[in-house]
Image 1 (cartoon, one colour):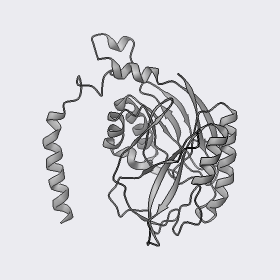
Image 2 (cartoon, helix red, strand yellow):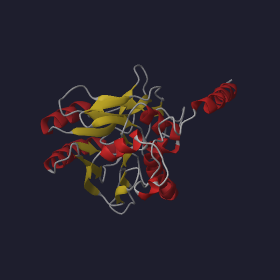
Image 3 (cartoon, helix red, strand yellow):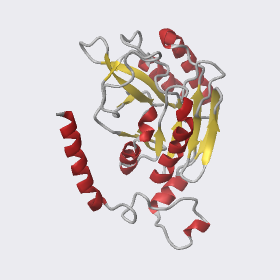
Image 4 (cartoon, helix red, strand yellow):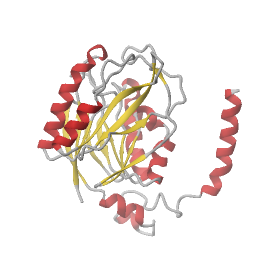
Length: 288
């Protein structure tokens, strides 16, 4: 069953006026639904807030809009920690078309503390989450991750091994010197996990260089540096075929990537167990 994804790369209001992003986000949701989208994807921290103390919570309004327009919405916000003035989880959320409670992913990597505190855009004490959940939808399993977690291949792999076929990796701001490696890794995560990967970012002026992208394991279906909304027709049938089949002689005649990369044809966990035991010991020693 095919579906449409509306990838929104907005010209965002600056963090000190982030509340102004919310009514614009609701209009983007309405527009995406009018163009037949089943998913609308916003960037990291959009519509906000970006800073602590959090001045508003967009989740109720986005949840209501998703239900009213019968669309899934991927969006970003902060979750303050009780009793702390600066500490928060940074979230990627998934609102559902049936109005159920919003699903949430708390960014897990890096360990923290990290660059969000006292930044020009963000200002909160980042607290990492400790779970990599996947979420059921009528179109397939969805995995959520955030921004530079694309540089940690274990994040996307953990989601894919749990069955996630559609991975949303909304990002923050203009990538500057990182742009080329970031773009490469978005497609790499799709190739190696036989998944569809979606990303987009905030622009603060129309002249900034964005990275709105939708990559499948065999081709890039969308790529734009411009502000706006881009609607892409997506099918997971090819993903499912590539996951269900095995690499064989002559497969390169009809497959643009290797088949069965999540299967026992390719994965040999018995070779990795020792590596991860060593890594855990090394990390524990560094933290002492």
